[in-house]
Length: 99
Image (spheres, rainbow, N blue to C red):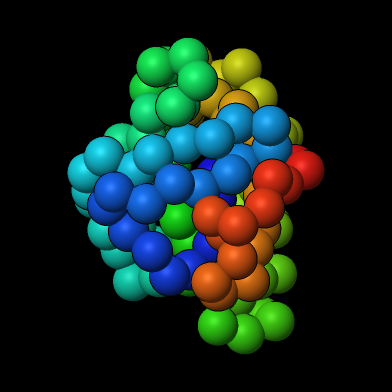
């Protein structure tokens, strides 16, 4: 789950220790996009949810969603949360994050 804004398909983002290239959009909602992302080092593919948080309230909602994903870790009907990170607009490709 990437809590970022800004760049889209073709861009490189850092989530935790992973460096991912966004290859195409899988879906989108009111304030988020889901991308197919490929790890540039291993070639492994991930679904990456990029949430656009334009206020402190939206950021808090995104963090709550991450907390819920942790609560249901291992549930057979949910995708597994691998990592999460946040970045300010314009910074997500310029640094390695910690998640």
